Length: 246
Image (cartoon, rainbow, N blue to C red):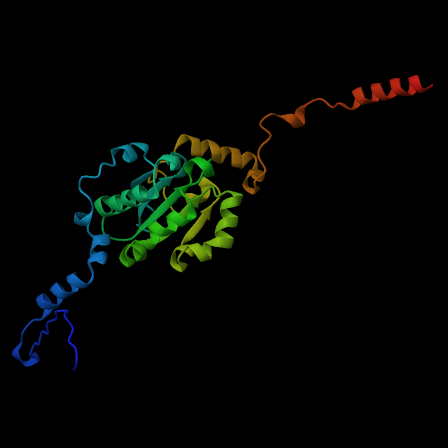
């Protein structure tokens, strides 16, 4: 040949009839080929000097008990997440830190509480959420069994129904389970296994008495429907105008 490559390579030949166990050799080669996969699964590859005490204090992402199927619960409280001051990169590092350092082996689920979430204050964006999920290892994705979406609003339902299949992996899209009331959550999770913030319970009470809120129709907080009718006043002015015309 006229040219030669400068890249170095090696060939490992193992005779099968010598009874040599090739596992140590092959595993060493596998570690060199898949460094990214190892980073996703092992906490030792995460930055040890990163301080997440401020995010831990907010309690928007915390490990709780188990659902009735035995899946460990990661509780996410959307209202507690300060989206304007936490970058997508730091959120990703924090999620990986929590999964690698706190989540034990085995299946797990997510309980996401969407109660009173404001898009401009608490929502990091569907693109960032997809980016974080797609960078998880296939092992962690397979261990995620279900995501309970508590108190989904009308916008959330429409967004997932129209854009969810394009922005979310097929596996995650079909794992989302909408829970419109806390009473339905107890069908899958025993009471006491996941902590319910007081404002979530209060919001659930509002939804119970004003079901149209589920469809984006806000409750009548100013009680405008109870205001006295203005009909008689208009009637009196109309009579005066008639007298003047005469």
